[in-house]
Image 1 (cartoon, rainbow, N blue to C red):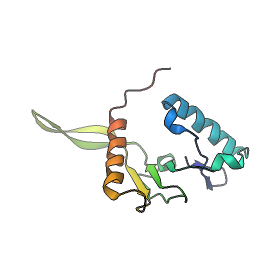
Image 2 (image 1 turned 90 degrees about the vertical axis):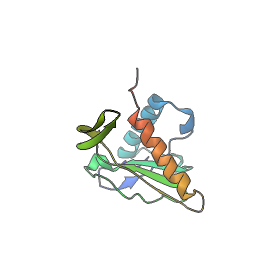
Image 3 (image 1 turned 180 degrees about the vertical axis):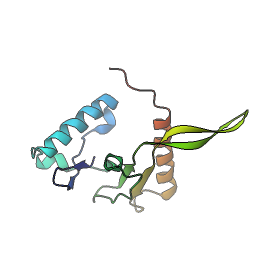
Image 4 (image 1 turned 90 degrees about the horizontal axis):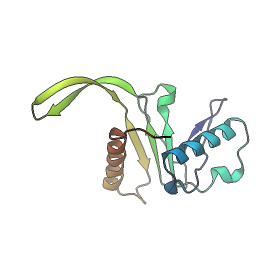
Length: 138
C-alpha cells in the first residue's frame, strides 16, 4: 500500500500475508501501517518483502493516475476518485442513461513477469469484484 506522509512524500509499507486476510483484516493492517508511517514509527521490515502495491490516487482528488512500480515488486494498481457520472445501462428492455458512482482503475506491471493479457484480466476481475461488493458486516 502507498501511504502519503504529511510532508507530501509517499512511503510503501507492506502488508505481510495479505492473501490470508479478509477485508476487515486488510483494513486493520492498512490503518495501523498508515498511522505508523505518518507518525514515524515504521520499522525497516515494514517496507520490505512486497510483491504488489495498491495506491489510492483518488484521495488527492485525481480521476486516475499512472502508478510506477516500486522495484523489486511486480505490479502496482491505482484507484481514482469515486465520482457520480452519467452511464449507459444496458437491459433486455433497452438502453437507458443513469447516474452511477464510477471509479477508474489503472495498473502498471513488469512485463518480464506478468503477461499483458493476464494483467488486463486481473484489472477486469478486480473491477467486477468491486462492482458486486455488497458491504462488510462487523
